[in-house]
Image (cartoon, rainbow, N blue to C red; front, side, top):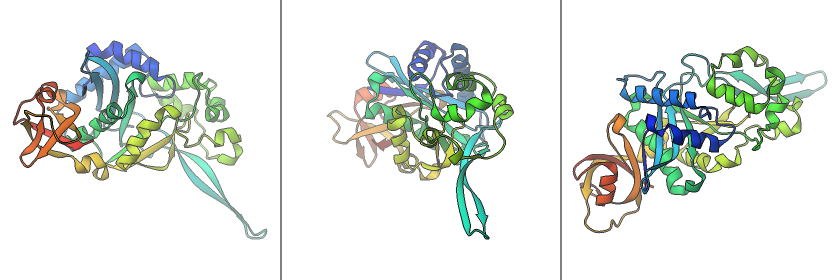
Length: 337
């Protein structure tokens, strides 16, 4: 059985291991002990804060294998990006070049540096140990964040986005970076990706080109990677796309991975989640596996377990109640997996 809960300082070694396993391209989860420790501290402050509207809070959750209490995954939510420094993306748009005299009218795709996502909530750092990348664990971890947003809507913006890792290989080669970013940053993709995760991002604004980049001027290999999702991120992307996220023409400035977005009030988990009482079962539940959440802020917990919907609430096995630290009559949220 799996359990999602807020991160704690004791989880730091496990987060280091997960960050090393995740590899290159997840800039918001760097393999740096000091930076990860800062993320834990920031998350704890955020859970403890009295929030009436979103700010610079960041919430980090871990996935626990309850059979041995191992940390086997993590994910998070930034309440609002771009609070201290602008959050940069490339917006894909078209530039029209026309000559009435020659009767030529060309629409040329171009990349415009922008910070349109500044002031928006972001899903971050979905990383799962390779041995646990099964549909239940992946869905539980990803959608637990949406149950948290549904419970505390005042802590997040009504627009939500996620960056998906772009195309690169295990050695850190990115065709898009080599064709564009390398010429302005004078470093390889691996180093730029690492610096973006551990340092102030002012260097991006200082070094990035200010003018539109005409896509046809890039090598074909680089053009082919724009908006392409890394193979390892396919399963996590599918979960969000099935929730209602869409690609709206924004890509990462480093690897050209797509950003997807949605209004929170149309997302499947948020719209369909139900609140009520936990009920006790003596027999095996007849219903399907459900995502079940309980607890206030730092005590927030989510698990996936068979459950039986009833008029008075959701009936759970004792092992599920024990796992969540609740009893019959406790307030819970749930949605069928």
